Each structure stands twice: as structure tokens, then as C-alpha cells.
Amino acid sequence: MKVQNSIQSNDVVPIIGRRALVVGMQSHAVPCHHPVFERAQCVQIAFTALSRTLRNGPEAQLVVAPLMAQKFDAMDVAVALKKAQFLGSLVVIAPDLPNPLMVLREITRDWRPEFKCAILAGERLFSAT
Image (cartoon, rainbow, N blue to C red):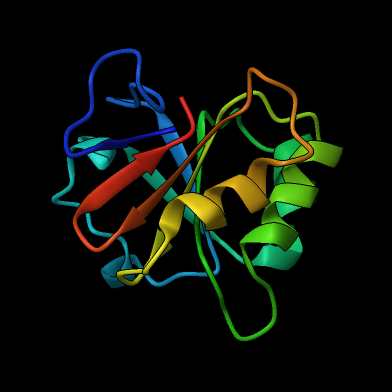
């Protein structure tokens, strides 16, 4: 795992012009100024609609979720993505954390190798790539 301060074309996912599902977050909570969200088409959905949206909705390349919300957390989102055989990337929005790589390892521990996940903690992006 490595710390990334900027996104390269093969890191996390190049989402310019692609659809991003924003799960259980208000749009003002997504740091749209960060390069990972550059020109992404963000669609806000409730956590309870995630599985149905992945199954029936337009294809999404990125899922954005908070580390912790009132009724779900990033692990719940990761489990739903795994069940849906999601092939895109997950970006978890978190406050500054003392050890974001440990949290990232926990979220991705049961995933197949091609799964891409990152934690955006403050302004720094921590990636499992």
C-alpha cells in the first residue's frame, strides 16, 4: 500500500466523465476539488438503494461512501459491493486518521486482487494499489 497525494491515470480509477455513486452523503460532504472526482457525474443514493442501483441502474465506475454514517459504515458498503460483484472502485471519505492504511486493509481484506479501494483522509489519498 502506498500514500498518494495525486491521482495518476492507472491509480484508483480515472473517472473523468464517468458515473460515481455517492452513498449516504450530501454533495457538500464530497471534496469535489480533489482530482479523484474531477468532472465525475455524481449520483446521490441512499445506502438502502445501493444493491438495487448496482443491479438495475446505469453502470457506475466509482462508489463514494463515508467511513462511518449514522446507519452504515464503509464495511457495509464493501460487503454490498462484493455481493454485487462490483468491478469499479470504492473511495471512502474519512477525517484525518492516525492509521488510514490499517483501516484500508480491514475494508479490503476479503476482496479479490483486482478490487480497487482508497481512503481520502483529509487531503491525502491512501490507495491499496
